[in-house]
Length: 190
Figure 1: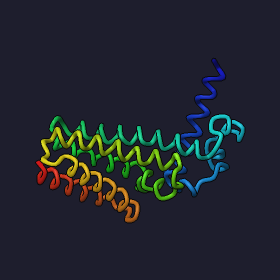
Figure 2 (figure 1 turned 180 degrees about the vertical axis):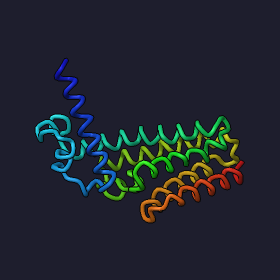
Figure 3 (figure 1 turned 60 degrees about the vertical axis):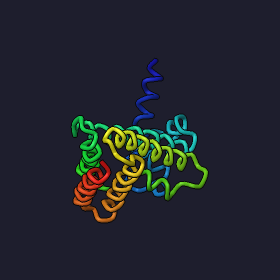
Figure 4 (figure 1 turned 30 degrees about the horizontal axis):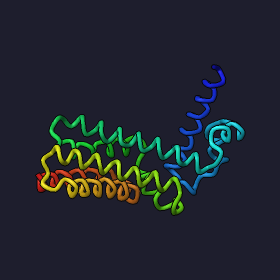
């Protein structure tokens, strides 16, 4: 039992360190030795949990997908019961992310750029985008959009654009502008 607890704590430390490093420096910009140093585990401990860097990257992306979806959905729910307001309110998750640590861009856009064709990292990135778009489409249907898939694409593009511009400009105002554009898009589709 104690071994399992240590294993879980070590794995969490590795993943937390890797997440911080990958988010700030990209997937290719981080070596295993950096993850080992930042997590404070032995090399053998890291490899007991993750046989390859690709496995570590994949688990980082899966957890980031779950976390990011939860943050956007929570921000949307805080906007109230009206689905139109939820489509706008989800941008508060971007503002909160910027306020926590500044913009290092979207981890999924970064992964899409850095991952090899056919890699698990790229597959997870595509699944994240499909999952996000499916959720945005559901909310767009609830909002009464005439063309819910189109509205969902517009909102998704605004999210991606805000994260990308935020990375380039390091300006929180891009989220405010994206949120205002989302409000206009929702109004024009419903």
